[in-house]
Image (tube, rainbow, N blue to C red):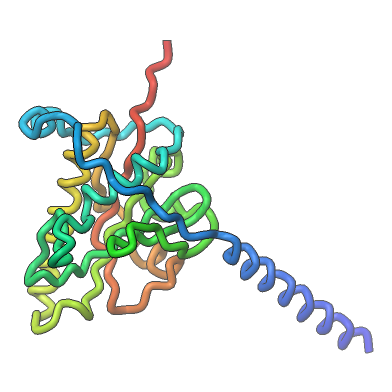
Length: 221
């Protein structure tokens, strides 16, 4: 009798934990982004001159307008009549998805609706890279290739194209950050298996790179 009660209590405990995890993911809302600002910023040649990798970040959060401008610059729709993006992709596959990993949760950038779609609640920043600055920065972008969109390409060509297409997006982020006084660094050091499992990515979606973005760390006096 006692063993049955222990089993019942254990089952109820497991159900309680499962419910807590499920409930914790249900209150993360989509974020409708404001229209991106397409005027202003530094001249292109100056932004190219000031482009650099930084590995020291402030914990200060990015305002939603800055997020909107950043993501549009990365891979937003620049030609609404054709749906083409600010970054090129091979055969216009548009296979690269941008996940925004922040303190409150993970979001997926939707260029069509100019919004961040809620993926899961919780702070997964440490899973986007082993470097110490990753967990403190307000935003880590994760670039994921959906290989189902890469029709007719061999696995070798898929690997080439997803890498180059991610590179275009990453450079757009670099130039935006240089123009806006933000800090950024693109990173290949990612535990792709652990992060893919945490994000529940299917096998056909491949994590390519991650990129940390934030304000530069203030120097102590």
